Amino acid sequence: MVSKKELTEDFNLSSLSAPQLVALIEKAKGLLSAKREEELEAIKQEMAGRLSQLDLTLDDLIPHKSPKRGRKSSSAHLEAPEKGATYRNPADPAETWTAGVKKGRAPAWVTDLRERGELHQHKAPGGQPG
Image (tube, rainbow, N blue to C red; front, top):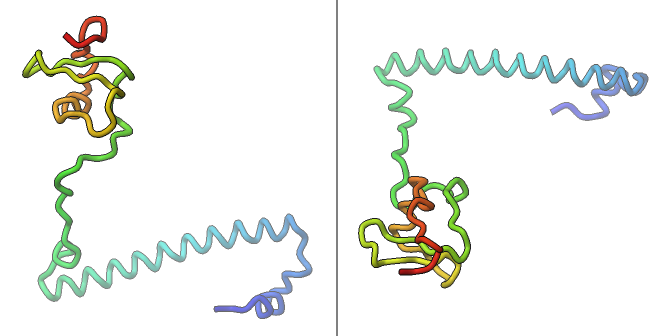
């Protein structure tokens, strides 16, 4: 790592104006990005050669993880129930659920309808349980 003192002595940065320093920083960022790309490509080439010598692939080196089981992804994208609205279970119309009445999890059939984007299609007429 190069010290601040070494940089200012080697390049005499202290004599540059603020706009000149900004321009220098932008140019350095561009060069840094290009250098990183070059180095990454060199590493890829080296690794490909080594893997080839061992008759391996990148998948052998870094196995892909299987998707997580159980809980689905965030509920932020799910269709939200209307607070106080009542919904009917399409498999058992006698079973209803009213949003926001009890704390805790909604029944599995409500979650399934939300994930499919069909919850509001099963809203009870008038929003009241039957």
